[in-house]
Length: 356
Ligand code: PHE
Image (spheres, rainbow, N blue to C red):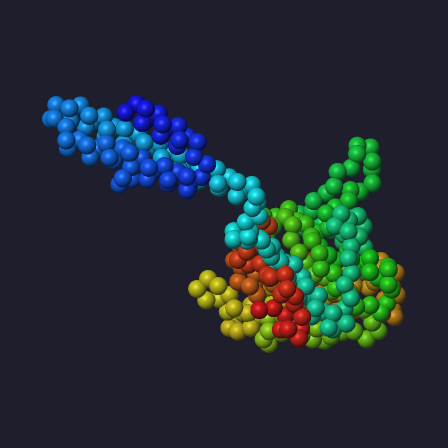
């Protein structure tokens, strides 16, 4: 029996493939295999002999069977490894998903504003976010002692000790770009300036950085009526429906007369719908450009006049797309961005109805 065992263990160890192994199985433990035949001979033995030989033969059979099983698994592993090495490119695997980014609502609305005002003949101007004291305040008729400076919660840049020049500021509004574009292009002019602005303020509707779009139109016979038409035209295009506006007399140092503009809206169950109802929501400041501001920009106020406005981009984005909290705009939470973001091909155009 030991010879039988050694012979098969040896042969199994040497088997080159599954077919050879199957032949061995038949030879050893198949119906007419050597070990099976031995087991059949148990019947002719005396009970005493059988008691000794029976368990031995069974153990041998078990041992051969498990050797066959182990070898079979080893052969299969080797075959798989060989295939893996040869077929390293598995074309049956599912493709890797590509993560697509989305356009932030601020960028989308920025583009929407640009498209609408461009259609009315406004070019896009830009200015620096770190601004001199002069452009941000003085040129806009806000002198050093003026309360508007304190009200704006300005961020001041650092100045080296001993440097007595007034500090630069993070611009508190896009209005300094009025001056810069007057200087650069003179009159007549028609520009908007979308951009980032900064104020030290933080709650559900205020963040220290936010966005405005400035508008400036200068010509020989521009009036408040033109301002009103342009804004109403803008809101109808932007909200895709006619929107009533309300002009409230107000005060800005850089416009005279000045008006704050509200749009018609309705509050219902804590959410707001623009273009219906009898509530009003303030969305911008505006007015006729102050003669001193024209002068600061190098334009003769006896010859030219114009209107200007400054509108909160984030504010109108919240209104149009039903986004409740401004702070989430700048949290960079991917779930928020995927929910409120726009597909990169959803480019706002007037003929496309701006956006869906
Ligand atoms: N700059 C003003 C603000 O930030 C808005 C404004 C712009 C008002 C232009 C009048 C004219 O509040």
